[in-house]
Length: 153
Image (cartoon, rainbow, N blue to C red):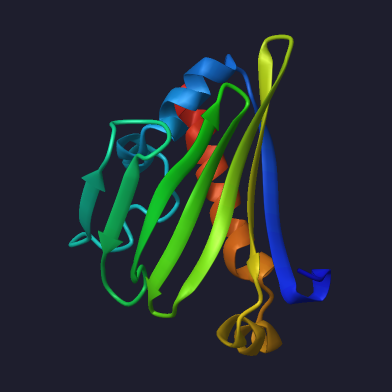
């Protein structure tokens, strides 16, 4: 797909921990309630977990208010260095994106890169007139990485 038909949002941080400690928080979607930047936005949020408890095939669906909408995340690949997640938004608009979280160890630290890519849809193009996808999601990624860092360190 041509670059002008896709978007990419990426943020990173360095965490003073082994990759395995970080992977444990990412690879089990139930742990996301401890660090996800979207937790707490809707106290009535309903969550459904299916598949294995962690790793490929593990899935998390949510249904919430208009701020969090509804959607589903499914881990499609998992290794000590990378977790790949198919992300499907159902509400407030439909979209299918891919999220990757890369873990790169260096000495007693691990660089964590959180990236989301996807096609520019009509809705995202219209929304992009007012605010870029990077501005809409980048701050959330930064907050999530900060919370993950606090949790693991």
